[in-house]
Image 1 (spheres, protein in one colour):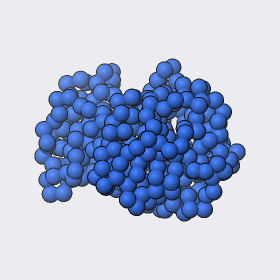
Image 2 (cartoon, rainbow, N blue to C red):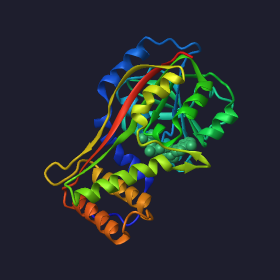
Image 3 (tube, rainbow, N blue to C red):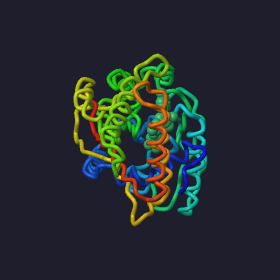
Length: 321
Ligand SMILES: C[S@@+](CC[C@H](N)C(=O)[O-])C[C@H]1O[C@@H](n2cnc3c(N)ncnc32)[C@H](O)[C@@H]1O
């Protein structure tokens, strides 16, 4: 596909679905399945809380895999466009399976009013009440207060965007004792793009790109870690979350013949555009040389040549604090 003139974040998240499906660590996923089978919620039904939930692709994934019993599934994202897209996608998902979305049968376990509340009912799928919240996580936690209502916390491609130690600490306020914590696609310090264009320059760009993650400040808070994956072992322990399982979940995107599967060419163009946005004002880079490098990477995608690998780690933990 030609280089897009404008980019849509919701299309990027949709295109990311097949990349994530391949990447998620199967061993950690199966450990989550076993841990859920042995888990008894204190106050049924099971309450799942997914933070930075995007357009709800993880809900589709866990329902398709029959991972969850009947439950309440709370989705939170700062961007209301994402939460609206999630409600539309999940309704379409149910319809495609001869199901429906109707009014939620239970109440939200949190005092804050949801943006939307609905039940997904489809053949052979346990009924799931979905509650969407369009809130910044930190404002949400401040408003929700210490309500230990969550049995399973999910954060997929999210934790490496925030200050991990303080965010985990604040999240413990809403976890039930013994709650499960499933943190996936946590970036861990390697971005690989092949074929090489100019190896020393390629390496410099990779290092500068990772440095932008480490230096990122959002709302006055440090918000990122280019080695979030490996640091989670220590960060989880310090928060009273025992690591039950961990494993790599690298994104590996490559053409079959000269074509990428599904919408993965778009996914790649979005990643290259993100690198451009992060570094276009970097004083260390000559702007013309960097623009030419970016154009060459887009051209590699158009030609069905680019291979992209991002090293990431998945974790399953149990809150014991
Ligand atoms: C990389 S996306 C991942 C989305 C989704 N989990 C997925 O993988 O498809 C990160 C998401 O976190 C959301 N986000 C970032 N900072 C947030 C915050 N402070 N509070 C709530 N959501 C946030 C963004 O709006 C975005 O949708």
